Length: 402
Image 1: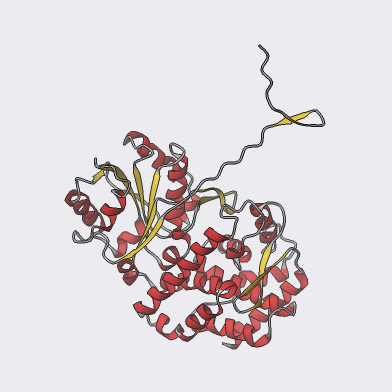
Image 2 (image 1 turned 90 degrees about the vertical axis):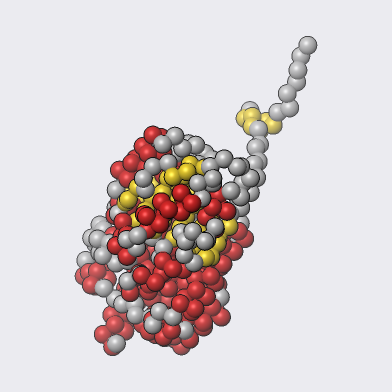
């Protein structure tokens, strides 16, 4: 008997077309005092899959957080003991450095992998990432690459992580002097935002996350920008109600973009949510990460907004409102490393090398988001470096005038 298989042939080439649709669902929860024994949120999240036996969990904790939350490890131990029918803390929590140090040491990924192996975690086990955005990125990368994916619960503890990096689908670490060179697209199992963690943030970390809210407001929601503008004094004075509204709306806009952009895993060359980030990523590296990510993003926003104005896309009054809002929030919009780009533009590691790295990271075609107005982002595919240099000079003048 002869079986004839259907074939698709083009110029002596055979192919089978495969199309797979995968749906990802995860919740972002907002609560307070997550590890209070009277707060069942974490236990309920872990039992949401319907399985009844206790789940193995390994917690990875930001060392910087412990300086301000010294009782956290004891609270976590007491919590898992209280909810022992649900939670099985497999090993003592892993303590890792906070900030970019977490992403600059690839040995930390191996350390987490080793503990996943020795603790006998499986794909239905959980890694808890408790800390700032860099620690969440690190743990997310380790979780996505162990067993091809262990369930990850992010517990962001900074404004930046709660409204931006912690709610998305990206994980990664730095390599070869480049931000997020190694990484994955892997959604978390859940995200739990605990507002109590924000009360002990220092001023820089409190402020840094506001930059990401400004970013998404500028490209997507003029009303949200006006909220930040009018609430700038309240935010500077750490009024929690204003900050919680900012975090919720920023997270909501990020999640809507991921779900509805049609390119959640960035298969194309467009990444509008990285408005201001091409310069920010490079400035972090050029300053040896003395700039917080949010601080660098604020400078990147100022630079790209000024460039948008010089291109004739953004009116002067909108530019002034953006710069004044950033300034009112306490951001420094100029650092010496920007001046160095003007005096040594031929340096192989200059700021404008960030444009090439941004293009390489995205997929080969340069795509930047600029502004046609507040709340109106637009994509461009080429830049005028002479205008960017003028933008740097204008930021220098603005900085000196303050």
